[in-house]
Image (tube, rainbow, N blue to C red; front, side):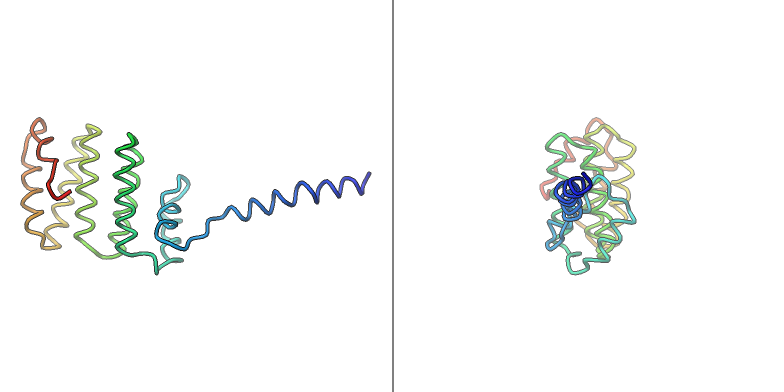
Length: 165
């Protein structure tokens, strides 16, 4: 009986342990890193560790993939997921020290909050966006964001359809 029990353990338990260990993600591309960064269980500290472990993948392409994934989540009617992904994209833009990327992401985050009818958060994101557009010297975007911030809520929806987005 003892031999049979050992055999069962070897046959059934070891493969399960091996599978559990092999399920760790292998990260080779920006897309792999986006998937890991957007994991439901990812925390700010785990994201920081991922970025430190894969510095060659922390680039504009990674930021673009995050922004695209956030927009896709919003379009799939998952706006809360979109907000979370935009927040990761802001981390990446800050990590890259690219104020224009931070500004664009904050603008898109504001647009998402507006769609959720969270107007105070939308205005806050737009105002932060304005600060980063100022820092980046992006005059055209700055003029546009000024128009959005100054409009009353009822007319802001037309202004949110930017020709540059």
